[in-house]
Length: 131
Image 1 (cartoon, rainbow, N blue to C red):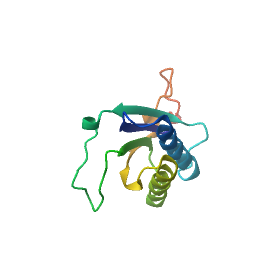
Image 2: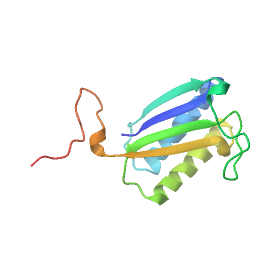
Image 3: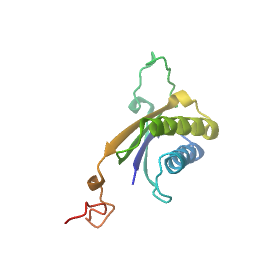
Image 4: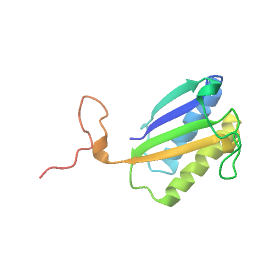
């Protein structure tokens, strides 16, 4: 049920976008127990002046123009250990397959409730059971 938003440079190659998309999906399935085929992603390309980051760095990290912002909205309940493993796998896989620095992979997780989702048809597919 995750919804992934990927914000990336307009100059990113199709191969980089595929590497980012695949890395996130693979980590969701392998680390975060997301079901197979649950792949909803939105990729938005941006001009250089639309991806803002601290040029002087932040928390000991430095960033380049290749920065990729990833926001994953998913159902709450995953442990801190799962989230840490998810961050690590995504950054490492994007770095390895997309050939950008792991430091340029910025990830934000947004936890939501099951009833916050409709997968279409105006239906709350994960509606709580009624008595």
